[in-house]
Amino acid sequence: MLKKMETDNKSEEKDGLKVEVETAKENKKRSIGYWAQGHALEDLVVKQSLLLFLIFVLILMFITNRYWCSKQLTEMDKLKNELVRLNDDQVKLTSQLSQFRRQLQIEEALKENGIELKKNNSTIYLIKK
Image 1: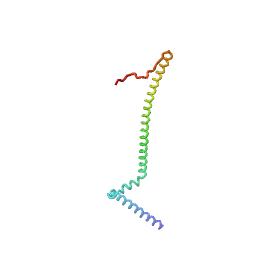
Image 2: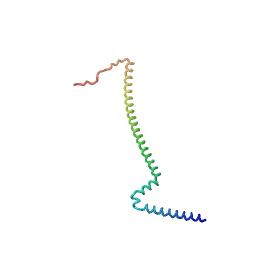
Image 3: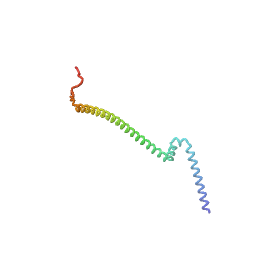
Image 4: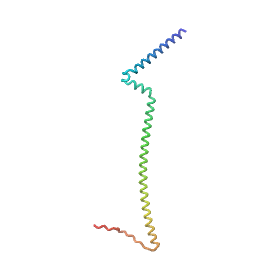
């Protein structure tokens, strides 16, 4: 019984010391020196380290995603420009082919009707010096 009372007294003394130590820490946290020396930020970093790590990971993901999207947009612009260029080339080739076809059709029609066509290799316009 005596031992139990002694242990209760010791635990009360320990609890009392803990309470005194905690109040001393609280008073210390309120002092200007505590803030000026940067201990407040140290406590904040220690307590919120997991949150800070999560924020850092999210920032990295944001930067990576932005870089990837930017790369995709430049690739899309390149492909659009190439598509416009290929469209222009296709229109030019189509017009050239249709012109060539017309010329061949005219030559064939003339041959069918028995009319001889002589090709002129000279220029139409004469350039005077």
